[in-house]
Length: 134
Image 1 (cartoon, one colour):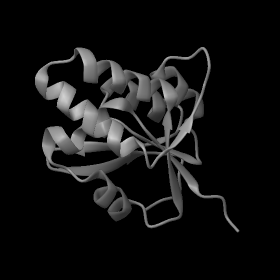
Image 2 (image 1 turned 180 degrees about the vertical axis):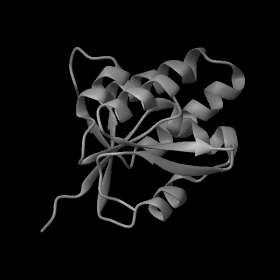
Image 3 (image 1 turned 90 degrees about the horizontal axis):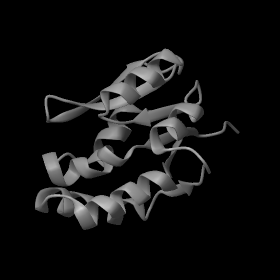
Image 4 (image 1 turned 120 degrees about the vertical axis):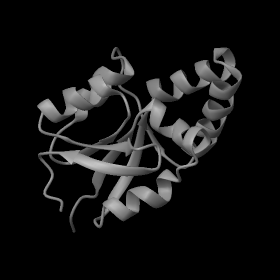
């Protein structure tokens, strides 16, 4: 049996449902017609918790919704790395990264990974190399 593809979700991605009314858990399956599992670095969850306490009113609301959404996602602890470095360290042919962070997207693609990102504040799109997907 094939191992499921790992889909890592960045902090900002879990805030999309509240910020732009995009259902990431409907959109991602539309893009990925393969077996996959969601993961979130614990550092991303910590970032969400921080934003939920210190961000603007809209950011706090979006972060709280992101925290709720993250409860159904497997957490991965990568000690000593910030969230972006942790995600880049995992990027490769068996991983897709979900982010809207331009720099992180670039770093993942330079490593040969694919990225799912928001397009036109309405839907998600996939880009990059490495994973044999349509």
